[in-house]
Image 1 (cartoon, rainbow, N blue to C red):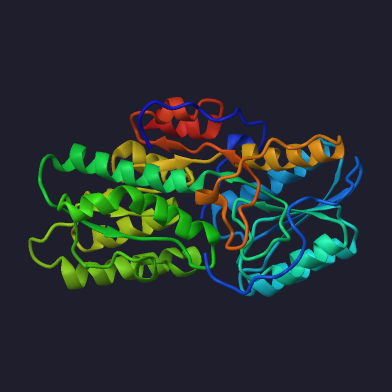
Image 2 (image 1 turned 30 degrees about the horizontal axis):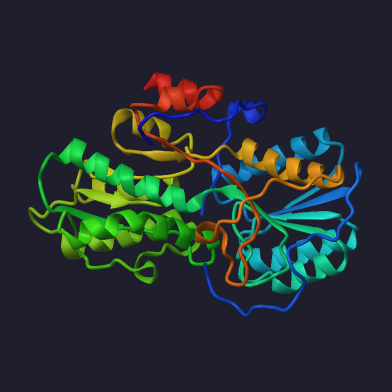
Length: 372
């Protein structure tokens, strides 16, 4: 999204495409074992990777990234995606199957992190190391590690981008009329993104710099079920029809990812409310031209290849008898029962001003940025 950038790790995979997605809900806790893994992992062992449905570009990229990283590290890979029609029971069954096959580590990008209590407890009981990947696994002690970008920071960067874009595009006009969108409640990241953003925006709402015209400012009110574009577009259309009639301007929208940003922009264009400042996340290829043209203001770059490699590096460290260099971050990585020891990666804010620099090493995204 903007400012000076440290470009991501160079990509060796998937035609240079590497991004990471996006994106808590309550549930009953359990009384299983603590965070220390009892697993003994060695080269050649089976590593299971359970991913949610292929609902966004970053999830599609993740499977190939994991396959290469696992095989290059000398392990065997069992990578499975949940079905979009029944993601939770599908993933529950897949994780159980991986444990039955003898997986010594199970890496889980949760379809719904609140509904895997039994599966991770069984995995631990079987001696597997449980690694939450990209999304935390909630309300259980039976998760050993969490590998993800700092998602609270993602939200803060999105909020900062919204404020910066408003100042750049709308000048000193105050208050700025804005609306807020969040991700899906079944994604543990969604509330973390939103809380990070509101840690920046709430003061600006309170002092009158921002006006949420609809009054909808809680996660429950602004969430987007399933992270589905049609749900975001429908809500934006309804908001415009109810609150932005006549000359009432919509100056900006906090969008938690690129897919929803494009849907929001489709709705604003149809309503004749052009040129709002809209944030995003994931550096999806469809959004890069929009950012360079000034249609979408910003995105977040989260390198999927780097994130997958970090998880496999952790497994390799365990196999070598090394203690992983983890971080205890209660703000970002508390799962409702424990703060999961984490490998935290740093997200990068991207706008048209720094896109070329930010995407150096990723030929596909860099070329899109250069094309403008």
